[in-house]
Amino acid sequence: MLRLNAEPADALIDVERQITVFGAQPGAQVEISATTVRQGVRWASYAIFEANDEGEVHVGQQVPLEGSTYESADAMGLIWSQVPQVDGARQLFNLSVFDPIVTNVSVSSLGQGTTTTLTQRLAAPAVKRLDVDEDGLAGTLFLPEGEGPHPAIMVLNGSGGGINEARAALYASRGYAALALGYFKTPGRPDYISNTHLEYFQQGLQWLRKHVQPRNDFVAVSGQSRGGELALLLGATFTREVSAVIAYVPSAFVHSAQNAADPAVGREGPTWLLDGKPLAHIWENNRHASWLPFDEGEAPHRHELAMLTALEDKEAIEPARIRVENINGPIILLSATDDGSWPSSLYCKMIVERLEEHGFKHNVEWIDVQDAGHAVLFPYVPTTQIVYSHPVSKKVSTGGGEATANAKADLLSWQGVLRFLESQSL
Image (cartoon, rainbow, N blue to C red; front, side, top):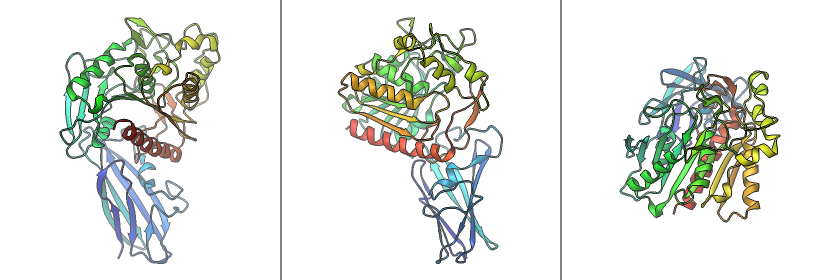
């Protein structure tokens, strides 16, 4: 009789599971499928294996046969290779971070079959969630189990806007007080990224310190994409208030508002204001910058190609360079070599070189994942949806990479960030 185990059956989303089949006929083909409903949309994957001489299949150790949704031995391949059954679906989590993500895992072979469940959680049971709607701030605070004090992190989204509760909840589940701060496209804030005041984030850092009183006064800033650019910029600007920077697929420069721009301002208008004045960005007075490679390039369109034209004008982009050497704390950079949104790998190389040139005294780590794309998240989520419509501009483009490399980037980046935080926040 077929038996199917998925261990641990219920754990945080970043915990690898071991899926094992027992009781198959030796040498028989065994098909394992995984189905998850994410915000009402069914996501599915499957893999076909040959049972070993003991009639067993160990998913993490065996290469699937041809026709499976992934190709190499991978304990969590059935999760990251899932594809939505509705075109364009991208929502990976439920509306509440406390709602578990439940995957039905089924096995069939020679007319026999059985099913089990695998539960992933973004928030540990004792994590507390508090809405933040005071002093002009819009966000959500997640607190870990225990009285603390806990080291703290401010979490920033990218050009899609909104509040990144998923990452903040997972940070809290790993012991960090995490404020997911929204700054546009969320209630109480503007609809667009254009003309965002940096002092708003300084206020968020001060609020976090006041209400959490973090251990060793440690407050890191974690951001992705435009949020990665912003995290570096905040560290370089508010040097006394940022203890460490976690920059996912960031930029080495200040960019214009781009795809998240207010149409009345335009995508070449400013993104960030300091003391009421716009910061210089790479599109200003740039002799080579052109949107044509993005707008009129071959589908799937790559935003990165427009950014590369801007980088050709060395003189124009220099005023927009983020002064990362001013950051008063350690930095971890996460990038991808096939980033379709902008050249994050090249940007991180520029950042590292600039820090070396200035004799930067703090720890710098850089994880650069070959063939991965822009959508670096955390492990064990589907990585198959690479072409998408931007949440603000609605322009369709590719984030780059391919599913296997993107899954690797999710895992390596999260492992690296947890090691980084543990070593820096003691």
